[in-house]
Figure 1: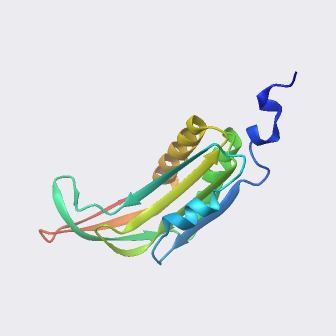
Figure 2: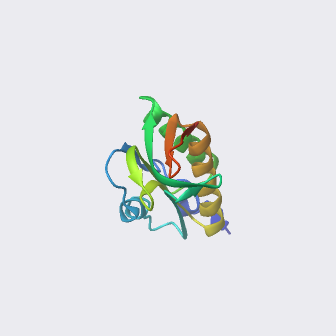
Length: 152
């Protein structure tokens, strides 16, 4: 009798990377969720990063994201690595650049896999590696008039 892992739906898709983008326009959770939809996926995990109103004990008024021209290529390489290491059926990642306000979406990533645990693990690996490796810089402006640059 064949094991359940022999079914094609239990394995990574041939081309799981559905959407990789850096944009200066508002992001859509629905777009990412739609991009990672797959009939063989039993689990889909999303991460939505939003601009919060504080950082390091200071009130944040707004921030701006900027990136190196290679940033989207780096995102794609990270996505390819995550997909190669896990049974990813579909994967998507979008990041915003430009000026954002508190509550705006800064990043949305999604991963679908045959099972929920795999989806959670792949999504966490994807967002953690994007945050640490993609050359995107955050310029925070605080209520007290100070500012700070943070980035990969």
